[in-house]
Amino acid sequence: MTEEIFTAEKGRGAFLNGRQLAMRDNPDIGPMVVGTGLPTPNLTNYEGAYAWLDQIRAPIGAVRVLGSTASCCAYVACGRFTGYFEQTGLVDRAAGVLLVEEAGGIVTDWWDVGQPISKSPAC
Image (cartoon, rainbow, N blue to C red):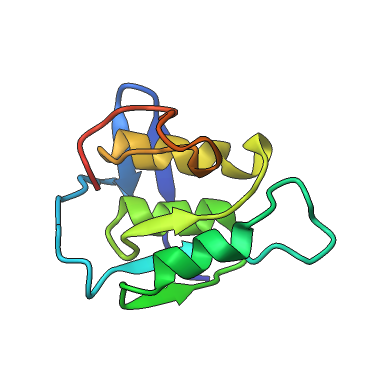
């Protein structure tokens, strides 16, 4: 529909329609846009999800919901989103994690703050 194909291969980079993606450092919080998915009330695996989201969204420009973890992560990798926050399983996020990491971004487990899944240049 968008005529966009995101690809990534471990150790070989992330690409959008064949062009290599490279994330940039931008410390200005105001214009940041973060993607998310909203947990339903019956999910109790990650109590406090809305409280975390509230803390994240307060100082930034916007929070957007696309409905797809992989799409949101692809948007992070190509610079449309500054970050992505959601409680989700490995199957939902695996492709997106690879895209972000291969574009030079950081992927962190927010539910265990201080325990990064990977260490890369800041996104």
